[in-house]
Length: 231
Image 1: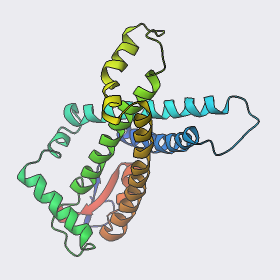
Image 2: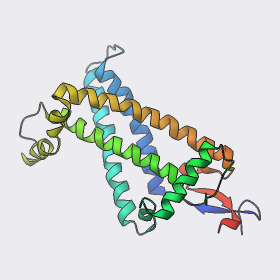
Image 3: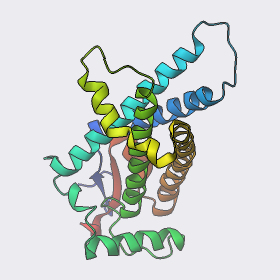
Image 4: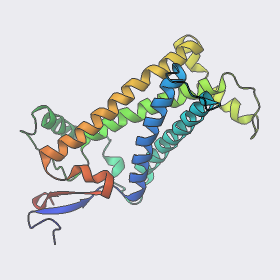
């Protein structure tokens, strides 16, 4: 029995853990952006001691949350038993490419052309999230280089940890011409991530208005509504 009338059905799209990851990422992006801008150019003064230290701590914590979430999302895409078809959505086969084309044309033509099953994950939206995760990985590598460049070769958990960070991220200095270039690149990519967040919010609202399927509720309740004939 349909929850919203005879012509629609409720479609489960996002489990509780995926929603927790989603909102953790959202808060982390805000925290990392605000504190990152302050670290680059302190824009306020306060009588509270260690203001810069607190900003760096919050920035590092938010970055760790985002980095861990990317690893978890990658694991769920490839090894999830709850949704084993998720890994099929990003394969560049003919079916997925056609769905991506139609989803893009749907946006371009303001919903006048809708030739794909909107009850399934939106391939255009999936491509946007791939772009976000690539930018987060870039921030992970450049950020860890900025973190480890001034540290000693020892840590509270052993010498292997700073050694691993140096091995994984020292190449960024060669690519960007030194630590100053790494810092500039790390700061510059923050703005496309902020722009991505704005586009993401706009697109979710746009889909909810244009498709009238309650897409905005996916990140809150985990489900949306879709035409019953799409079953």
